[in-house]
Image (cartoon, rainbow, N blue to C red):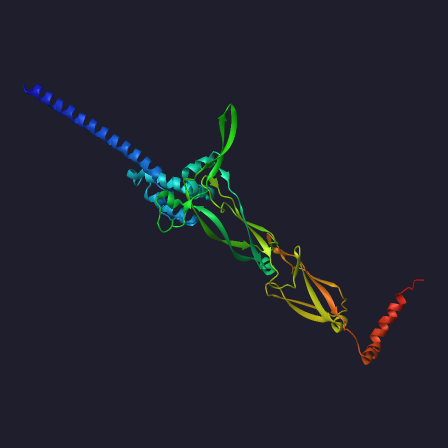
Length: 363
């Protein structure tokens, strides 16, 4: 049986329940507003955060540094582990997508994300190439080598755009102006004028040192490309630095290249031409090539040694041939006694008789 006081208690409990529900609604509303505010703040932070700062790396970071930083930070700021800083994870992911792509990275460096987006729409032009030469010897082309080359180029300064560094931005100044054609209507006539547009970015000149890989079997005037490493301009894809190999005459000048083959002059005496010879030839990489003959060798004769020529480019296991061009050093003259002595040699007499029998006189 219910107590007479039950109706009043029920009213009080109902009011308390309504009050608790109202507080819950207010709490949920505040939480949703806080989450929305945090998301909005995150988006603002994400858009303002520099990509290099997002990955906590330096401007000069290489590909391995970028990958290492991305793996570390993407785990640290993953939304499952750090939901309050989900915006940071998005900024890290976007930074990696840009900086891990060499072309996007250079566009970002020269003009920020605006230039990257313009390039995706095909609205960015390519800059001019830089042509330089690096001297190489035939031995470099035979063995393969690493050479240094220097190129003078313009760099767009990112630090000047973000926050000018008094020390590192000491040599920076305004980048070159750009020009565009503008139509002007005057007296019912349309005139096209060339209008100068001053740059909003700062640039500096610097000398860049390049590591040039000379491949085995490379040829004179072969070119090595350094993509997008030429002078920078805001809103442009930098051109290439093109390094041409220029064969110099220094080194072992006796070797001559003919395609994938080599020619080498081999001088022998008259005695060696008649009785045979042995020679040890030091090759372009200092290994020794031995050649010998026990038969008569003629002046101008070519002795071919297979596999001792130049390496075939892109096929390191294949080599051309080495041609030894024989040159017989004949005596300038003989004394009378030497002439008699040579004339008395039976071998020469027999050779003359064989030649006489095979010769036909022409009338």
